[in-house]
Length: 104
Image (cartoon, rainbow, N blue to C red; front, side, top):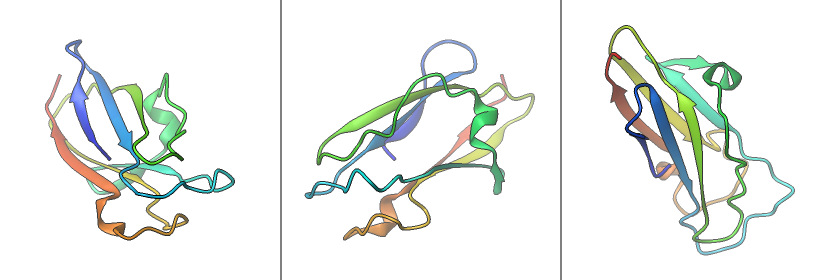
């Protein structure tokens, strides 16, 4: 995960997914994007992801997802790609990104 940044619009965030590997990923494998709020797994579709395709099979490729994260209080968010380890990697420790989303 490259990071989670506010786009400059209240509650609008971008999630960047990167392939920093050196080899092509088998496109028949579908890595899952998982989002945790305050350590609880949250349904992916509850975030209103409006763009992004997880088309990150080529080394050096990336994709950006846009979502609304509009909370009444500060929340911890952890975003993981392939946390079930479907894709064999030399570094399984760089699949998650955690940050604090401030109250809107």
